[in-house]
Image (cartoon, rainbow, N blue to C red):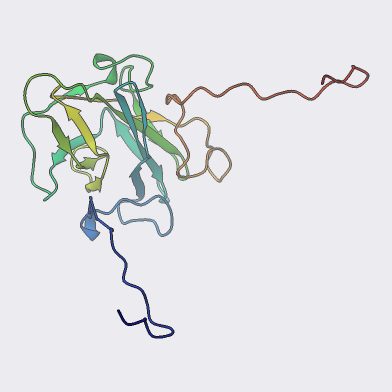
Length: 212
């Protein structure tokens, strides 16, 4: 076998692409940069998963110059890998029907978001598998309210055989005030579950004996 020439690139083997996701440019989510013509940034977070329970947050930020009104729940259309509508999944209002304590429960309220303010909702499901074929839905077309421009997000809904998806009402993010401060874009929305962290160790107080 001949030796490769100096500077020649070695062939790369063993690489496999398992998922390719894309959304139409006109429906691409945004979490920063130029404000869309809709006046709001809409996007999904990376989600949380524990013991078969899934929670993905939907976040909306008023990046425009006028108040933005919300009332109720996000409007969803579930789409397969080819962006075709998926039927047979029951979309429930509120995440409490799936699991409690996710932050996606409660009654919907009328919200008025001033420029710079944010709101969040949540998608809640279980990936339990019983009899039948498991359902996996990569995309969801989201409208903040009926008639609003659509944004396509990629929550990767591995619904198992449950056939149900809970959608929480819009809630105002009280941690972020207009004009800056608070939670930065892309951070976890409030009232969302997160993995428990061990308490941080405290340094010994002055004058106390050091422990080995």
